[in-house]
Image 1 (cartoon, rainbow, N blue to C red):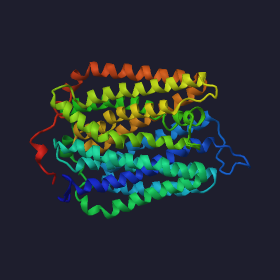
Image 2 (cartoon, one colour):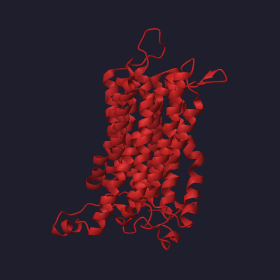
Image 3 (tube, one colour):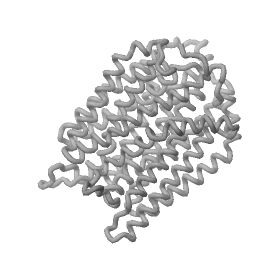
Length: 451
């Protein structure tokens, strides 16, 4: 890999940063308008018609789509590990995503479903492997690895912040198909960045074929320590499932709740419902660095600061975000116009992001620490499969809210997340033993520049 650095990190990190930024612009732009497009009235007088589906049907498709997008990370990881490597998988994924968005621009049911199919395949090939490449830029135990994933995560959220504002406005106010096309242009920009940045990614993500012989078979057997680490890694995926089950209400149930039951008038301007999808990323950009600083200071005090502890705490904080939403649902029952103050929604998103920053970047780094080198892409794919299950559960819960009501669902998510997080923190010390020190920072490596 290139030895050139910028702000203490290899330039390759910033190539991956901008590639992922534009891929997330593509994904979150699509995500912001998908449910709104499906539920938009399909009538002659509507200047921007959609499919005219009911909320339940739209949330059902949303759940399947977001599940499959992440579930394809498993074969995407295997594709890289066994056949073409991480770098070529990322390249292939970008091409498939661009094709998918090109199909969505066309008006037609066949083109719509075909476009979703190509995007699902593309994200599955790209997402787990570009994250694995970030870890590949650093030596094992390098303290800069965690901060690299934080920087990488900022890139994700710049894309996620801008996409709902730009794609959301174009799609919701002007034309849905233009919105889908604009999201595709974002992915095309990311693909160009990745292609021209290859000189900074030498020896990172390249495929190294292995001969299938007896000696190789012996090498792939796991040691007892590796087995323990994989066990704790799989247990951490349960946290991931619970978190994304709650967090992904944003694109479905919370999206519709914002459209139908939140007062969105600001200075005589009606804020598009899709714009609220930018709040997660906006808050990440706003508080991401202060939170990273907080955890550094916290760890120096000697208090518990393991990855598992952070993830448990994040789950609890995410749960409290749904307490804010429950309060909003109660206000709609008392309000004359049936609308709740936007402040509840703003508070909920803020708490969700605090929880996210305790879980998502931490989990990405945790995988590259725990997984044996020969299985990193596969385990990263398994991580995204856990996200897939969380997304599907989110869709099912959103569907259930159409009968049970938002209030019952919001209180239910609050109780489950808080209870689950407390249980995890209770057992965190026992689980830490299974990591065999892999989650600890190696101070000697902290000052070594990656090759």
